[in-house]
Image 1 (cartoon, one colour):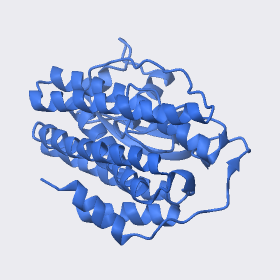
Image 2: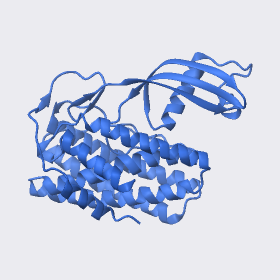
Image 3: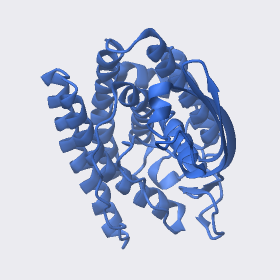
Length: 323
């Protein structure tokens, strides 16, 4: 079992100290994803997916035809298996092959911002204001969404026969996220900021492969980095109360990182070799995507959010140490 506290501490001590940049607010309208004052544009991606006859049949009409809308839905569903969100389907082409069909999709992908999410939980809404306000509002929304994410995941894994110790830890993680959300909400209220309304998540039952991919990406990459960043913030933030908040969040997010590892181990033991390979590939892709995102990161000194250089250094060291 990895000692994440020691790993995170060694990474932070080996990275550069806090740096700042001069930007203080954002006024230009963002056509992509507004992420803490950085505008991340949607991007085009083309991929070919192989579906079994059974999988493909689930989409087609009784007469064997496939409409453009049905083809687009295949693209959306297949891209979501890669734990990415589709902004728009530009084209979709299908071709029969032995044992199924190949579907080639060209889509516009919504870029990753940060945090751990569940496929059924709505992403945080964009907000206006200074970088400080944007970061705080998004952080509060993310912590609030994490409560739903852990509860939904607990129910899904319970339905799949997961051991009770995983279910109990997921439920405990949800309780901890409630307190994280309350802390962030208090900070928002003190700055006169109002959180957008909470959107209720629509539960669904996914396959073990779908859950494994999401956990590998969201838990073993995104949440792992978020935990590391929380440790960095606790170490560097100047405000004493914020240091207490971030220390608590860092400690508990570290436990959630270990939980994601244990869920990963249980899920992988129930997948085929080819499915395990797919999960590991998606995790590696998510690690690479995280580095690309962090290259455009801007520092937020008030909350000790690291700038691009430091963030990339943190994530790179993290990936190297857990490889």
